[in-house]
Amino acid sequence: MDPMFPGGQPQFIFVPPGSVPVPILNQVPVMMQPAPFPVFVQQPTQRPMLPPQGSIPQQQQQQQHMSSMQTDYMTDDRLQEKARRWQQLQTKRYADKRRFGFSDIQKEDMPAEHIRKIIRDHGDMTNRKFRHDKRVYLGSLKYMPHAIYKLLENMPMPWE
Image 1 (spheres, helix red, strand yellow):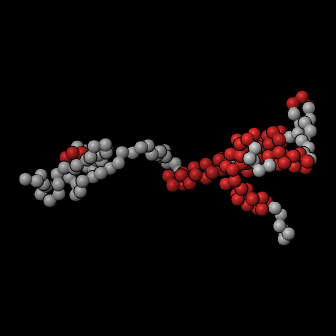
Image 2: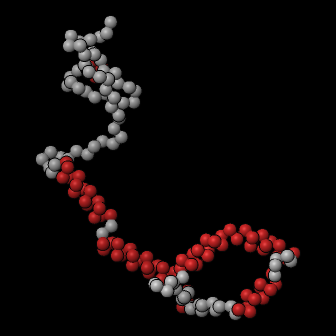
């Protein structure tokens, strides 16, 4: 026989494990409350913040909180300061001047004869001396299309 009230509603609420029972009536124990359907309520992960009584309505308070978070995150002044600091660090990092005021001169380009000599020595790579290099060079061939594409991409075009 089903436990029913005279109104036809079930006498008990079935609450699954891990969920929080919701009190429907003020003084009646949860398991004794009538309900039209079983109630499934997820357990809250964080307690909601309630404003003190007599203060700003909650919706306005949330809007103010969101706007203050956006302005606090990155103001224009702070953004400019960070950009200036980053630029300063990069200038120091890549500057020609080194410690103790020593200024390092830029490396000069090697003469064309240097490259010609390397190519002449390596030849067609059949020499036993370069067998390990041959492996590296052949492996790097798969990157050539991308490298050529990047070179073409960075070349200034006549209409630019």
